[in-house]
Amino acid sequence: MRGSGRMLFSLLMLSSLFFATLVAGVSAVKGEQLTPPLPSFGNGCIDKRAEDIYKMLTEEPSQIILLDVRTEAEYEDEHIQIEGVETKNIPLSEIEERLNELNKSKVLIVYCRSGARSRQACEILAQHNFTVFNLEGGITAWKSAGYPTTAFNPSPTPVPTPTQTPTQMPEATPETPAPTVSEQPAQTPTTSPVSVPGVPGFETIFAVAAVLLAVSLLRGRKWRNQKCERKR
Image (tube, rainbow, N blue to C red):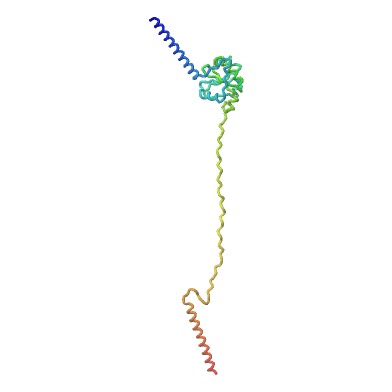
């Protein structure tokens, strides 16, 4: 009985140990997925392009410190500033003396003019257990990608609007002047002494009159002839 009890106890202990190991492994995997990887000492400078840095700054601004390691004069002249992001200016030569000004619970994004000084600062910070990223190409690459600074705010490229070609109205053809009617003197109609058209029976009356006139002339001639003969 004692041997069986000891064996059962051993199996329970092994099962508990296996279960604890399994839970710890799962938790570690989930932790790696949710938290950014910590840089390793001596080689903790992780370069990021301007596009990636801009995405990080705009998606989680409250979780980031933007660190400029140039001189104070360079910083005052122009620096990167994103709404909601904490900004710091600590020159490279003063990094190790001013580590206490930086919050280790936040992610550090370090930059300079071209990326050389920020790389050195990034490696120093990684050795002190900061989660740190280096802006590859510095503020020069940042501006070349079209992102704003305090002295550089690119305006969006205007979209050309199609110009409407004015439609030409057809030229008005000159009006042809109406032909002028020349005034001619009214012609007086000439009446024919012989006949007046339009009077019915006029030709017959004229013929009868002509016959009567002829008869009258003949009678007159005959009367004169008789008068002459009497005188003889």
